[in-house]
Length: 225
Image 1 (cartoon, rainbow, N blue to C red):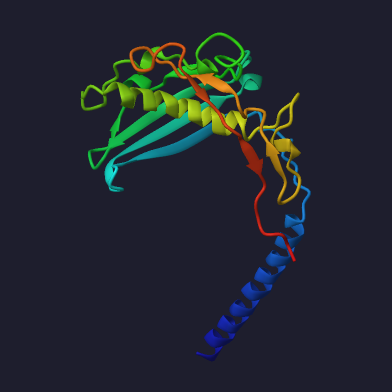
Image 2 (cartoon, helix red, strand yellow):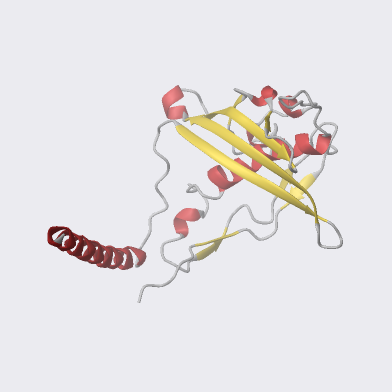
């Protein structure tokens, strides 16, 4: 019994010391500067994104919930030898309200090459994502999906690339996330006040656009004392 108590006393002292050392290192690290100019490693990447839309009525009560689950694999151009990074949808899950979680067979192994300028400065679908697979989709139970759900599914891919390939990757010729060096730094992203096409056949009319307001990136956190 005495040996066990001695060991416990030693164990409780060591973690306390380790925590103090870890806090000191954290304080030093938070002083910066930070370097966000380093891009991803040229290796196969796997991503998982979950999006949930909560619909509210005029009385403030929930009227519906949609959950979208996106799993993507990226093979960088540096590995594949292709001109652009290639993305493959490994699986797309969909849940409407409290219904069963289904998948969308049409998007299984759906592959495309990400083009940041496509649909923005150059002609073509937004970010190079073909729209055809998203038209008239059915879920894994054979249910026909309404047009607005098909559009939201397509938009999940667009949002994914906006978050992971536009706002959070360093920019070469304009100011981007690499400008953030210390806690409190803030920039207006070059994507601010731009328009992006949102038309999808049979859902949103040609010529329709989404207009951004001010898009800011800020490095938040508590200043070390």
